[in-house]
Structure formats: structure tokens, C-alpha cells
Amino acid sequence: MAVDFGRVEVLTFDCYGTLIDWEAGILAGLRRVLDARGVAAADEDLLARYARHEAVIEAGPYRRYRDVLADALRGVAAELGVEPSAAEAAAFGDSVGEWPAFPDSADALARLADRYRLAVITNCDDDLFAASNRRLGVTFDAVITAEQVGSYKPSRRNFELALQRIGVPRERILHVAQSLFHDHVPAQELGLTTAWIDRRRGRPGSGATPPAAATPDLAVPDMATFADLATRW
Image (cartoon, rainbow, N blue to C red; front, top):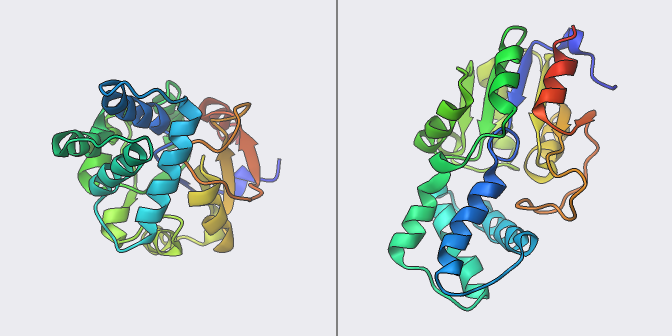
């Protein structure tokens, strides 16, 4: 294990994909639109299409996450030959608060909060993250959203603002995330140690995130395993 938890003071988390099951939420929203039009597609195909569209939108001028979601839905639907209504696109954009937490997230965060300061760096709007946070049952010491920064990970700006707000040396921070693309690549470029919550272990492809190459300092399959390791110290 390459992480010295005895030196870690702050854990920073990605939210969607790490703590909240965004792939389940995304698929449910896409299927509401596609099923109503008789369009069939495999889960992994839909997630890969979604990942491409979301990444392109987020790399452009900043827009609220609910608008990113709505346009990503339109992009996926257009590839499959259908068009969602304005109401369907808006509902998909607002659906984040309905996305379920992974079963182990709340308990793991509660255990970790007894030992560490917790922060979140999330590609989301303030109000949508607040709705998700109610499912997690923990008060984060710092919350950095894309809305506050005006950009989306993998932009380094999101991490740089987090480092400013947290105010401790980066060697005492461990970033915990699922997405190699959004989180591990930029965090490691900034000299942060990272732990990979590999929620997709054993599944093909990279799901709702674009493929990326990174070598996290620690890899575990879920938050329960991570909390077990991190609270031994």
C-alpha cells in the first residue's frame, strides 16, 4: 500500500461515481426517454455515448450541470435517431437528486469523519449537490462545486480552489475518486496522492467517464474497503 494514512489530515472526495451511483441515475434517465420511443441499447453503449457528450460540453464555456445533462441527453438521443422533449431534457437535468447513493457510502463517510477532515470536489451545481448530500448523511468541511469554480474537472482550477480553501499542505491530503479521467489525472498532476474507488472493477470499458491512463497510489473496490484501511491508523 503506497498511502501513509498517518500523514493524511484531509480526505477530498469526488461525489458522482464514487459516493453517488451516477451510472444508475444516468441510465434510468436515458431509458425513460428511449424506452418511450422503443429504442433499445445496451447499458455500456449508452454510458459510453453519454461520457463522450458530457466531456465535450464540459470542456466548453461553463454551463450549469443541469444544462450539461440536458444537452448530453439530446446528444445521445440524436445518435439513436430520436429527440427528447424540452420537458424530458429538463427533467433529466434535474434528476441528480434522485440518483442513489452507493449502499456503503454513508457508513464509510461517517467512520472516516471521526478521523479526518472531509471535503468534496464535485462536477455539479450547488443545489443539486445539496440534494445528493442528504443521501450521504455527512457534513463536509469544504464543498467545492463546478458552479463555484466556473469549470469542470478535469480542469486543474477545481482542485486549485480546493487546495486554497482547505489550507493544508497537499502532502497531507488524499484525493479519493472513481474517475481516472476527471480526478486522478489532474490531481496527480498537482502532486496529490490519490486513492481509486474502482466501482467498475471487473466490468469492461470506462462507463460514464472517458477513458484515461493514471496510476493511483491505492486501489480498492468500494468505500467500505477504503474506510477499513483508512481507519486502522
